[in-house]
View 1 (tube, rainbow, N blue to C red):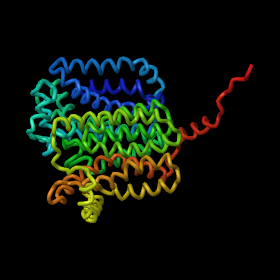
View 2: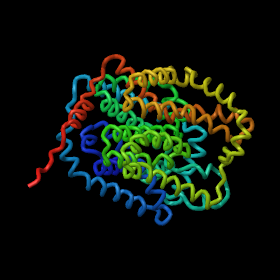
View 3: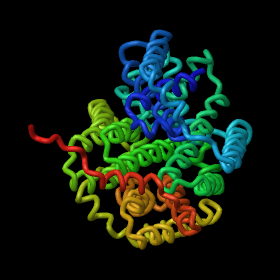
View 4: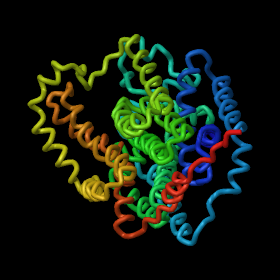
Length: 462
């Protein structure tokens, strides 16, 4: 029931904001609704939790989700008749998706524990919130007692406590369903995006297969089955990326609004979401500057930076200290530039860690080079920026590591950080494979190109 209400709220937002063509894609609609719905639950729980708690908080959030869905329902009824017709290879894709979802759910519930961060950084906050009537108390930030990393955002703990509130008791096994819930969203978004870019179900099958074959995404710390916040951040990032690609292809304000609605949760999942926001900003900026569409960039970036500013203002005013990183100052940067060579070595070592990634990162480098060689900016640019640029940015964070020795920090955190952009890398590799194998039938692009060449009718003077 808890996750169903979240989906209803997300579906309402998608119906109200999304382009009409996007609503006609069942996979894109459902995947986006799953992600946005989870974000709405967490953000509303956090904001409203400072003034109301208990069953009143739960029912107000439920009412908000149901209201959003009710406003979008009329459009839903109209659009479902226009939804794309299933094909024969869609049956294979459906079997593949359901098989992977079953496997991930089985791993999460029966074969994988919450892990250290899952228990002490995320689950601990959920337990505190449950003991305080479903809301995280302000004392967690003002008491100065650092029982958990209070500076970490609370997207995942508040989604966990939302489930606890509906259950009426704590059940750490049940909250492991959040992983499969977001895994389904990621798979559907990959299917939708591959269909949008190359219009081929076979490429969607490649994407789903690759997603299930990356070990770090399935097992271990930060994975879908671990209870860490790294996989949720990866899925939210993928959702925002998919919407931004839609904006790049169509240029509509509706696509920009849905991109902003997805991206606003990035800084609320983890502080590392700022890297994702930087990559998304670089993704849309060339089009925005070229067309001078400042309204679009306001829709895309303002909500996310508003959430980021609000969260860090709370942390700043509460005098919460971040123990893992030094302040991001020029003096600290210059003092630790001597780490650069070792960071390059450790990063390269991680990228070729076959038991973590398989051949994902070498394939991403090759696939990125192949897409760039085709000189179709609308295809390669957003994928390369979001899949490959983080491989340079994330290691730079450890120039400010406060750990001694800092190498231990790199080895503990870097594998989980690369999970964040792994779905974008999977999307890039799938598109490159599909084009290389001749599966590209980009009818939508051709149709839009023809439509763009047709002049608009002009009114003759009387």
